[in-house]
Image 1: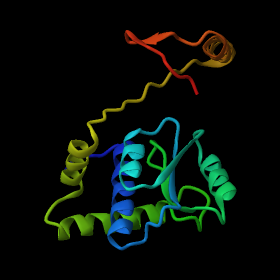
Image 2 (image 1 turned 135 degrees about the vertical axis):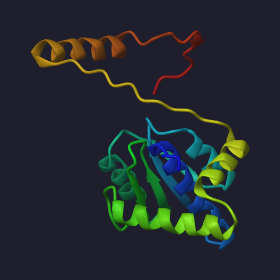
Image 3 (image 1 turned 45 degrees about the vertical axis):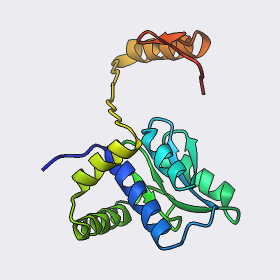
Image 4 (image 1 turned 90 degrees about the horizontal axis):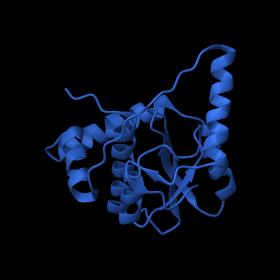
Length: 175
């Protein structure tokens, strides 16, 4: 078996939802998904291809829930999540919901099997269609009072003197 990361899982679930909603005629141009700013941009490409709006928010489901609350009665939330395996399908729960996410993943796996494929093969097909994405996490740990002060200095420096380039490529936008 292949262990999928949170970005891959979220991408698969978003793809499954918007594709099935499209096939069932449930997309009417007022649906949207939400992802956090540290979650893969693949999700936006998938949403765009089906005409589904997408919104970025800060990390944490309280921010996803805020987007949902602000759009109530205006648009229909259909799913969203973050890279840490958190996912929220529909809007009846306003926090990450492992029960519905696991049920949705099982449903997506059964659907994929009915199509003669697996979730992993489906993910590879998604990459071929939308582009290949590879993400990794970097955790910076600094312990104690000195570590807390060092992190505060690092964050201040990033805010006041943002990088002009990353890995040789110029920074063109800062959000």
